[in-house]
Amino acid sequence: MGDQFHAYHVKHEIDKGVHALNVIFLRMINKKKDKPYLLEIPMLYLAAKLSAFFSLPWVQRFGNKYPRVFRFVIRRFDMQDFLGLPLTLLLLIIFANFSLLNELAENVVNSESMKAVDRTVTLWLYNRRTPLISQAFYYFTQLGSQYGVVAITLLSSLLLLIRHKGFYLIALILSVLGSSCSMYLLKLYFHRERPLKVYYVPEASFSFPSGHATGAMALEGIILYFLMIESRSKQQKNNWLIAGVTYILAIGFSRIYLGVHFLTDVLGGYLVGFLWVLVSIGIMEFLALRKAKENSRLEREQTSITTYSGKR
Image 1 (cartoon, rainbow, N blue to C red):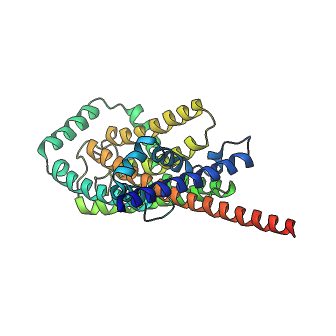
Image 2 (cartoon, rainbow, N blue to C red):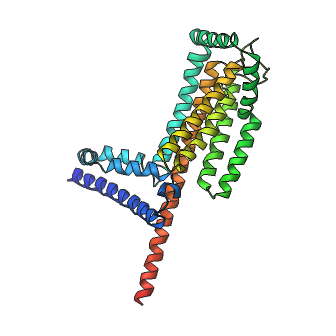
């Protein structure tokens, strides 16, 4: 009897969540039929996928068979509560950060084989360096410097404010500031020296992780996410994806080519930046869904008031 009650309760929670999301989506679509609803509140894409998954027949059968376990899983992916999916993502990111720190400390900084790979890649590029390409990469890599990241962030923030993209702005600032703080602390923790006698220009800070690679991934990564959402066609998405990935990889490659970073410095920077992109997207999803729920509730209340006034 108890298991049947739990199974019914789990199914009821799923149906209620799916119904709420469907109501939100239909209202947004009816509100602006000439404009995809993802442009209205784009972060609901993930919520839609989750609701569709939990509505699958075999998933609901699993919930009926193992109600307690399934209810626990549903709560971990619940986007209507910060203790659900947002907190789950944040905990996973925190765990990944600590795991990354330990793994890199043991296998990258203290591993002779990884050091040998770093030296081999650095010397191979150094022996093929040309003045023209070096100068071109030097100017290009300034986009990933502190001044470049600040300038692009301020410009992007201004554009988002003009377009009233508050959720985007929060995610952008969080991704850039969070990754910058993590990068600074990791540099202090590892104290890794930069490649000697091969650098194109001297650098004063420590080597691991690469600040340019971290900033490129955190800044351009979250901007690429915005552009992918706002794109109206698959071709646009592909174009932005190719352009964004090319830019991020070029920034990292330029740091190795100029001899100011090892390969593992750049890879570490990419990982740190990507983790903060995920954190920002998770929080943005939560804020957007909460806003959509609030708008839906206000519309229902307004409809009820209008209906009641009409009857009188």
